[in-house]
Amino acid sequence: MPKAILSVHDKTGLIEFARGLAALGWELLASGGTARLLRENGLPVTDVADYTGSPEVLGGRVKTLHPAVHAGLLARPTAGDAADLAANGWDYIDLAAVNLYPFEATIARPEATMADAVENIDIGGVTLIRAAAKNHERVTLLCDPADYPDVLAALQSGGISVEQRHALAVKGFQHTAHYDAAIAGHLSYSAYEALELYPVRLLRYGENPHQSAMLLAYRPNEGPLGGRVLQGKELSYNNLLDLDAAWRAAVSFERPSIAIVKHLSPCGIASADALQQAYQAALASDPVSAFGGVIAANRAIDEAAAAVIAELFVECVIAPGFVAPALEIFAKKKNLRLVEMPDLMVEPAFELRSITRGVLRQAVDYGDPAAADWQVATRRAPSPEELKALRFAWKACQHVKSNAIVFAVGEATIGIGGGQPNRVDCVRIAAQRAGERSRGAVMASDAFFPFPDSVTEAAKAGITAIVQPGGSVRDTESIAAADQAGMAMVFTGVRHFRH
Image (cartoon, rainbow, N blue to C red; front, side):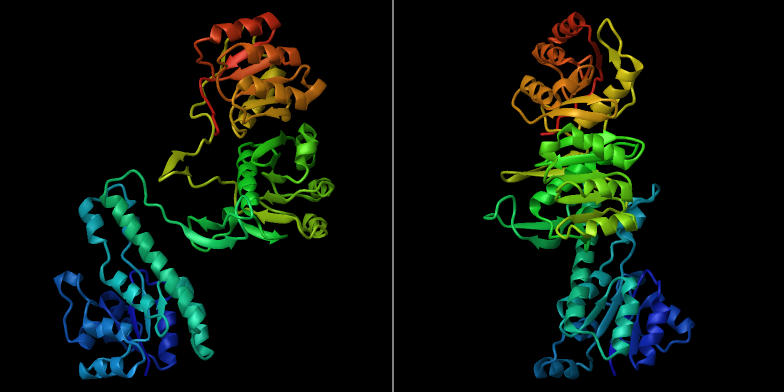
């Protein structure tokens, strides 16, 4: 008769699962409250204490920590292991359903003390999980009640495959790794949680074909960027970087918005009443660079937007949804990758970048930390139309590589310059992209102007208003250049470098 040990804090689905096992002829072993619940529901169960011949001690702190239990889980189907079990009067245990004391839920309570946290550090449960997972060639481990129905169905259909047991074992080790990391982080009084990464899949290569690469996620079994790939070729390393950059830009705007990214640099960002209009305005910002780029939307892609997007060759489209007619349009472009996102979140709230022998961590730049009013620095204040365009350009420039310069009209970029060693070159690049459209446009700069030359170049291009953080020792020179050109200039007091 096969044996199962059940030792769970979260008893969701337990009775139904145990009834299914009993109906299949399994013998049930259980500890403490788990055994009481099974018995109260009319299920035959043997207490672990009776099975091992050792009582629960230390107020329940020690229940399952006994060789009869762990030898039963760890024993292999060999003559030697079977003889060891028989010599001690023990038996094989074939399944373990285990979940742990709620450590994270405990420490999340504002009133929780360190004593509360320590008391909710599970010992026996973790040991059961690791023992069952280690011996998964023979033993089935369940540490998540959501897996009960599938495992029971497999047992009713003839048995669990080695592949299924392997997947459940991996889940068990991931669970205990996360549990231990939460404990270590809390007990160290650290403001930072331990970093956990789970492999999603190997990529064909990295930035170049000679570089190996892998996609990892902060949660197990999560899709790219937390989303779901609906169609298209396999996502590449570079695709994922561009998708992330485009998504961060698109979701930072409230109105229907489109961001087009090429090689990690936005080449067009726009907002409008409808996605189709936003896309057309974003594309007009730099149609040459947009070819072969990545497109992000902060609304579900509708049929009208899909029709105009499909006219351009793009690598990927990412959005929080795609209506059925849009999917039909995109289905004709077999290689186009579509990624559907579950929400409009950018998470986690931190960013990591590797450096030689180390990692840098910083909080995500979600925008200005305070909604303080901007300071008008020049004699002329911006008009209402200019102010609206400045607010759009200011948000857009936060997603451009420093030294970021954005020219905008209304709610659309018309020229973007960034990633150059000096700011004035970025102004010139933005002006070149915009051409004659820069006459009457506004400009945003992610950081202050160290010299007035950028303001002078903007004036030559026809810019009428500028938004920048301010704070340079030469601010007075930049203000004077703006006043001389009749431009309005406002200071935000906040910098938005993106290296």
